Image (tube, rainbow, N blue to C red; front, side, top):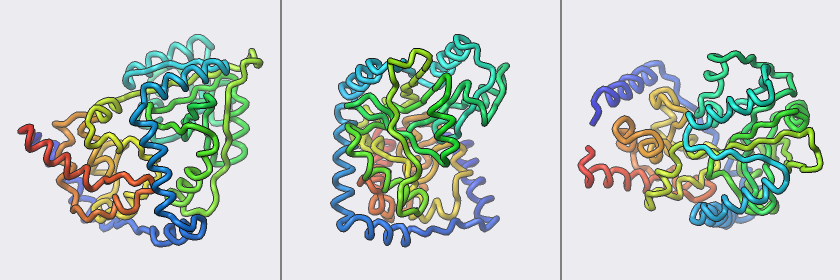
Length: 324
């Protein structure tokens, strides 16, 4: 075990606990809303789990199909191995279009890729009103239509993104659905679990238009460690996550320590599963031992990811391979 990393994790936990900033969960209200919208919430979870696992279990062929459909619509796809590969190709696009002002819509993925820090260290400016260059994270790609499902905080944001001169979308290899008809269920689940709302946020299904010659649409599909998780059959389905944060809201550990001790954009129960593989085993293997094995995360997950069982699988893996 890398003692220093483990010590830092423990000291950060200690600091947070001493401050008494316990997170208050309102997951009970979310369950009520879910039951009001869907008569059988367990059946809905089964449907969503099947859709997401079907994509992940045949991810290579599905991504090839999406690439073909998106490109035929006039979009340009850049495949990226990691954040360094992405930032290099990202800068080439900015240079090609002589971009100076960039409108970046914040997201977990923007933070993971370090885009804002990259911009700060270059000769570019942030401008949250410009339409010259937009950087946006779709919620999902849609395989069969080569479209992107976009989720907005306001009508103003929607107008900026859809009318951007150079649109740069960033998406992980795993965030896909098969067809537009599947969007509605996932929109409701995201709104309920992430925001506690009984209705989806402002959304749009965006498809590049090859007839618009002035439209420059780029999609960066980025691995950044996901393939390492795909190779591990015991935790592969963790990549079906829809980033709703439901597992965090019911985790007794996360509700006490919060995000800070993770020192990463990933935090909470799912981070305990994937961080040792997305980042590196040495620095993050201790996370699975912060779990109480209560099973709350597995029970609440809207796509039925057995998170608690995966954390146990990681413990077994680390011991059997003499990593602990």
